[in-house]
Image (tube, rainbow, N blue to C red; front, side, top):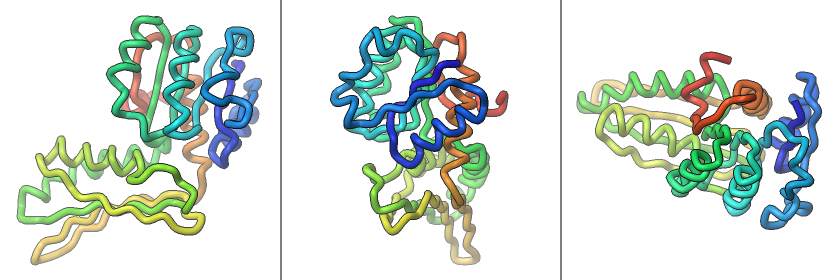
Length: 226
């Protein structure tokens, strides 16, 4: 496939590297070359099969709109825009394109979500829960999209909305903890990313899965098929 990666940060560059290693033709565009989606013209997107976005919450909405209107399938790993999901879903459905997004493309994190969903039952048995997340100091959004997804999963499973505490320090790739405490014991669930490669591989595999498809998808709906 011909893949256009939006974002030349640490994750975006790794996505481009993984895509090339998996045999795809990959081009990466940074924010300086794409102010307000200016680089996403019909001519630039003409030969592109799928666009993968790892930019910023401020840039992603315009990128999505430009790519979807051009009829291009898109995988979005940027977070911080989820308040616009109804509008974006309607745009995708009107255009007949394929769109897939996720708070986190790591297989390990998605397994962590499933464990958290089961463990949320503890909150109905006199446990008190909290969510902690740690990321590198340059991360733009807080709390992280992964932490918000974890909060929503626990809320759906237990009816309890947990507080999220965020830390931004050093070069931490991403650590998420679900802690449930009772007078008798404490349950600790933690996912600690060692590198960004798991995110990048998941995003490229999502793009491969999305090839030729139409519709609005969440990575949790498809990751077991990959």
